Amino acid sequence: MNKTVWNGLLVAMAISWSGLVYSGQTEEQESSDEALSQTTSATETADEKQLPSGIGWRLVRSLEMGKSGKFVHMVLVDKDRQMDKTIYSAAINKLCSKEPEFCRIRFWIQEYFIPEKLTPTAEQLKAQKADHLFNRAGGIHRTLWSCSVDHDRSQCVEW
Image 1 (tube, rainbow, N blue to C red):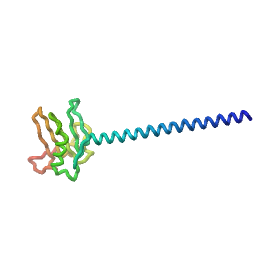
Image 2 (tube, rainbow, N blue to C red):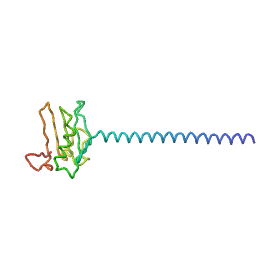
Image 3 (cartoon, rainbow, N blue to C red):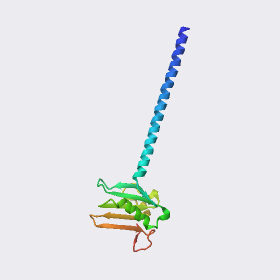
Image 4 (cartoon, rainbow, N blue to C red):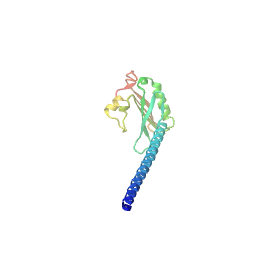
């Protein structure tokens, strides 16, 4: 009988210990998941704060040209406001005001056309609504408009 009690006690301790280990792992995992969730939320909040936007437009991404420190900004314009050139001007002023040498912004109204690389595909280029370029060294300061934004054929470009 003594042996049976001892075996029962060992089994009970083993079950109790495995339960503690399991619950400890669960608590650690929950703590880890919670910390990851907080980090992700903080990162998303930081990203949202880092990417400028304004009424009628939002910066989707900025891509560096090689390792030059010069960026091409990819901006999404509200589809309902695509004909309003003040929306484009507001984005240009916000994104280029602190760039004394170079600033390029490309504008789209459909986010899925915004390229993830510097060089857009033919389809992405065709969907582009405007292209602003300021390059002090090259003496360039211009904005090209898609003919769907500016209907004046002498002022617009069909990409």
